[in-house]
Length: 305
Image (cartoon, rainbow, N blue to C red):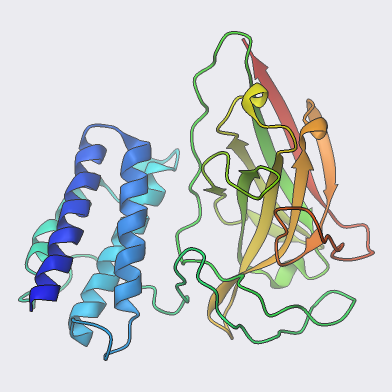
C-alpha cells in the first residue's frame, strides 16, 4: 500500500505541474510534462500482474488517463487546438488520479488505453525477432528499434529571431517507398545530432502522413529546427526516421532513415537518400535502403534577421 501511495503522489505532482504550465500558457513545458507522465502511466498500465502494485481495473484507468494526456499534448501542438482535447477536459481527470484506489465510476471520456503498442523505456533494448526485410538485399537486423507509443505531432514553434542568426524551416514533402501504400500510421521523427549521436535540439515527431499515393507517402509538414544554424556544432546532421506501426508485432518500427549534413543547408528543394535501419546516428556503417530511385523530398527555407 505504501508503494501505491508514493507512486500516486509522484503522478499527482507531475499531473498538477502539467496542468499549471498549461493554465499559464507555457505550452512547451506542459507538453513535456504531459508526455513524461503519459509514458510512466503507460508503462504501469502494461506491466504484468506480478510486477504491479495496481489491480487490472486500476491499470485500465491508468492507461486511459495516459491516452488523455497524449491527446491534450497533441492538441497543444496542433494549429486547431480548440478542436482537440481541452485543459478543462484534462482537469476532470485530477479527482480520478487522486482517488485511483477507490475510483469505480464510468470513465468520463470514450478513450482506450494504448497497451497494444509496446512500450520500451528510452534506451532500453529488446531482442526483437529478426524480421523479413521488405526491400531487396536480405534480412533485417533484430535491433532496438521499437519506440514508446505516443501520439505523433510533437512539433515545436519557430524560435525567436536573433540579429545576424539564421533559422531553418524544413518542409517534409514526401518519401518514396516501394510499399508506401502498406505503411500503417506513418510519421517521421526529426532530430539534430552531433558526430557522437548526441541530441543538439529537442526531438520532434510529425503528425501522421496526410496521404499515400503510388510509391509515395505524403506529409507536407514544416519542422522548425530548434537551434540557430550558426550555433550547430561542426559535423552535426539532421536526421529523419520514417516510422510505421506493425500490427502483427504490436510495435512502432523504424523502416528507414535519411540525414542531411550542414553543407546541405541551403534554400530550396533537396532530395536525400534513404538508408536501412537501425538508425546510425554516428554515420559509420551506412547501407542504402534500396537501389531503386526512391528518396526523401524536402524543401528548406532560411530565415535571417
